[in-house]
Amino acid sequence: MADLKYRRILLKLGGESLAGEGGFGINPNQAEYLARKVADIVSLGVQVAVVIGGGNLWRGKQDGLDHGMERVTADHMGMLATVMNSLALQDALERQGIVTRVMTGIEVRAVAEPYIQRRAVRHLEKGRVVIFGAGTGNPYFTTDTAASLRAMEIDAEVLIKATKVDAVYDSDPKKNADARRFEHLTYIDALNMRVGVMDSTAMAMCMDNDLPICVVNLWQEGVLEKVVYGEAVGTLITA
Image 1 (cartoon, rainbow, N blue to C red):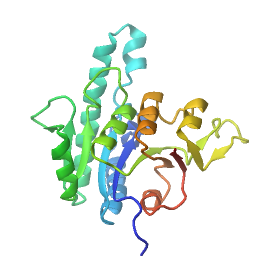
Image 2: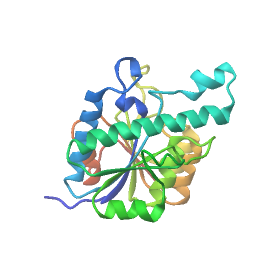
Image 3: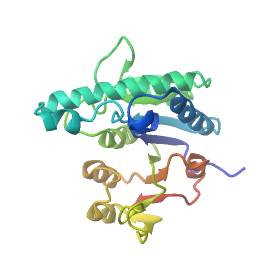
């Protein structure tokens, strides 16, 4: 069997990866399916950290800001939504036999550990999956930025952005049959194109710290295994 290219990864998931019908709520079947995908790469010896969004439970702009809610309040509600998703994924993973820890950027000690960088790394070294909830713990920062920050703090070798499309395109491939697909982009190209895969703060942070980003379709069979073995899949964004 080929050697692993990446032995420690940060997997960034959208909240919709857990969603039920219509893209809202938490579907236990989705959680189990997602847990099996993570368990498959853990079984290869990969150390896995996860950041998951909260859009299936709370969309700050649509549900709050557009109705006059204060931004800080809306963002804190979004952080709590990601904690709920983290706990759901933790439960699904542990039912797969994967020891999992949820660590959060805001304190919710009754249900999760507070984020401590050294402790997170120690969990990974022991083979535990670590799920980072509550973003960075600060309003105005997205879960994409939290993923970039945590990836660098734990010294991840790649940030895998798992989406519903198989790569980065120059326009929406569902609306434009001639959309151009990219197998590789530089950080600068991705920023200039405003590809929409990650926000500019997260992308710039990865660029400044030379952290590769791999954009893949989460639901494509075996895609995470292909990434960790270094196979050409999705779009790789590097220097």
